[in-house]
Image (cartoon, rainbow, N blue to C red; front, side, top):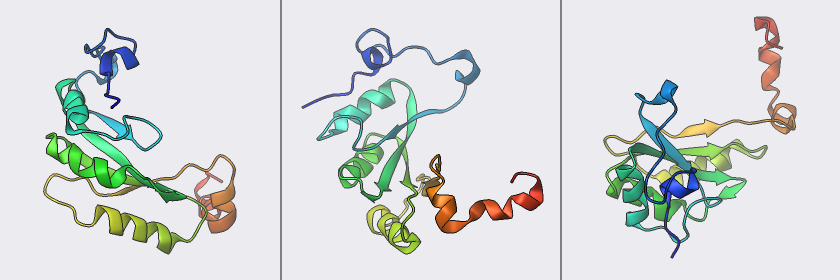
Length: 144
């Protein structure tokens, strides 16, 4: 099983997390995780390492074109490790109802301390704007 090596992965000594940059040193620190990164399969110990390293929250990707294969395993582990948890959908140019259903089906119910689900909207290719025409509303505000 692969485990998270917080220090070595970030350029520090193994097991010793590097200090955060000065401009964020007094802010809550967290992590963003998906099936593209982190151990597979994850364990509770993996998230306890992050808590010990000073992280207080984790944001997990529910889906990006398809449901993230590690979400249902990782989401409860984040809470079990004593971390605040959140989720997001990496919005894709496909049926909005499907993407909403993925979040509703996999997050299911927020518990006290959970962050509300979010949308990660990145559109370098213009595919989302081509489908949903969201930039048309920005033109009247000097942003289009």
